[in-house]
Length: 304
Image 1 (cartoon, rainbow, N blue to C red):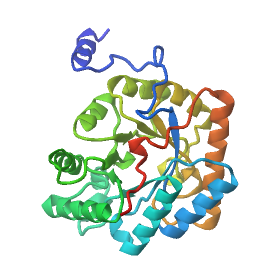
Image 2: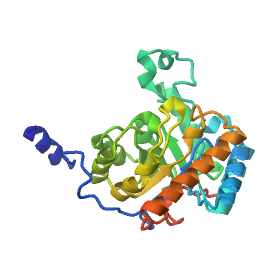
Image 3: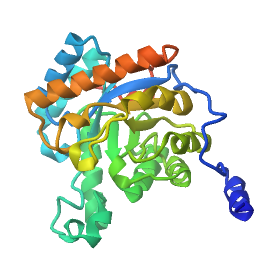
């Protein structure tokens, strides 16, 4: 059935079905199968609090993600966040703004325009986004959250020609909606170092992504209420088995939305949920190993 379509997919290096049957856990380039990620770390005090709580819960968080944009933080605070993560050997990824929801265009807010998402509008939008990256690099940031495939293309060309350092990493956001292995292949060829898959993909679908590309994936264990509010804790061990290397994004279920400033209660619940996921991994897939901290895609800051 569908033989022509299957052959077309195979001819461009893609699997011809969504299946996990022959998938086995692969590893990060530096070793290990998975990392634990916390997002919405949108200022220094939130980051510091989450780090302290992770110590209290004996949770080795690999990477922290800021979600509102470099433009929302003053230089001194970015430096403090970078230094804290560098000292603790933790990754830190800052998101790039301004995005379609930040500028004067109302299209992204109307029903038909929601598909625009967080993309960068026009050449000026790209210029502003590049300035975010230049500023972040100057302040010691090594990883950036990308919402626009055009911006990814430009940044990848700049990394190739040495305009920005080779060690800079690009994480492709869930809000840019990578929904199938062909999209993942396209993004990888254009410079993505990790891809946040859409939260709704099944385990078999995730397995088909892994057959198409080798870069690490970012996979939600749960989502904020605004993103569906699901919890798939029991699936995470199997997701690691079929899709490693992966960063597991834990704890958004503690918040109504993903990009606001979480309260102290929400931060506590986020870290507790991450600990729950970590315990499930150890209980049901004890062979899985945390990523080696030397892994480049963790994005440990490089403060001068």
